[in-house]
Image (cartoon, rainbow, N blue to C red; front, side, top):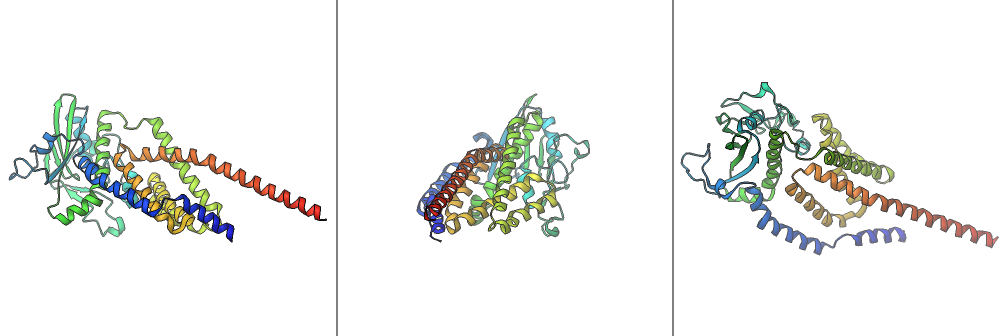
Length: 363
């Protein structure tokens, strides 16, 4: 019993103290509001683009004030008609949103990105419905919220809301500036809430969507195939290692259903194995920490969650970034675990040998 308590105590001492965690979190929040939030709210847009009037702006506002709108932009090395083909076919049940489907499908939205132009999806009209998730999600109780309608349309120039307002600005015959503009809530409480929760989540999806449109229009993948393959291997290794940990310990075996059940549900409802693996790892790592470290896990867990949030905000492709990170952790941790296991067996063998010699001497 004393050995068990000693091991648990040594594990606990390896974790950061709550006071240190609090100081680090305070620093992270300061960095977020002072630097990250202003950066991602108008990501990619120049000061002139943030202030200029764009098609679809309310007619009463010639120069929209930056406190009422946010504008994001990206340069695409393709003519405007080529970019337009990718925009007009967006939507759930159509071409998807060219974003992080592995995150979208965690909700069961069943969104799948297209990598080719579909002629049957090239026609849009004012009033057309744009689905943001499958209509029967959660029994259809959010069906009226999970959709928008086309409210503005100017072929090869303007389309809104799909789900936001896109404006195409031709730079020359082979280059297009794609601008995205959305309004900010007028209610201060809602704006504060959004700045903490909704705005960063929204940015993670929108910046990947803009990059997704760019890579498809240009015909060049954002992440090279070899890097993406390594990322996929990293995800699989991490999931396999976590599953082995749950099954190898009798005390933790019943808890494997906690991450396994949501993963199965995601696959069943969306067919997205990447999203299922993400669900398994997210819930499984949380359970792993709680079972291993107890209550002392949660302060450190907030730091881990903050690191995850930073990767989501800063990485051009979060799926690849997480996969590479998980693979590196696996490569780093596995040799250490094997070494400790061999060392433990050697210690046990030495103990048994000593005990056997003692018994022989006594007889």
